[in-house]
Image (cartoon, rainbow, N blue to C red; front, side, top):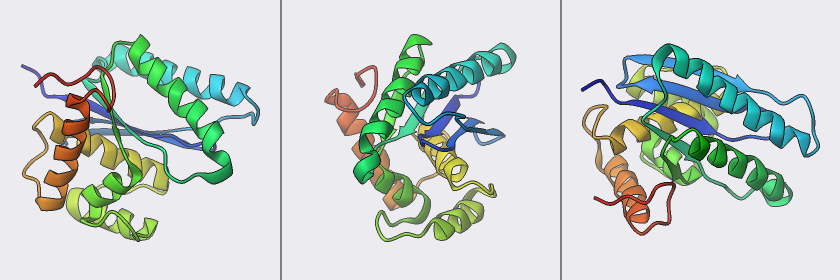
Length: 187
């Protein structure tokens, strides 16, 4: 059996972070940047993700699982972020890639041990300390953590500490109830 291959996605209206990760040994970060600001941005971002997955799939195969960061408190931007997030989820389903959703607080908690009140600089520092990964884009760093959550959901990526175990347990529990991602978890 080959090593699990996962993808982490941090949706954004300005620069979506995407990271491909294979059992911690291979990482490829990408940033998807739209050139428009109206609804065509949603189509453009969805097409960019689909194209990235198809091109990457030709070289390495499609991911076994994707973890996408859920919606935070986006205020006035929540509607547009929901459109982008839904387009990404549909692209994953159309390509047959199962996905789970990690709340922003779960991304923070998995990386730092705390889910609230954590500055982006602290997240970047903790990601580097834990996994020796660094990137200039906070979106890519969050996508990397999402990919790490994906590995943990597949029982890969090394031992977990107590906060990480809580995050994985919460995501799995919602998936079993059919409230997190696609398809519903059956185990």
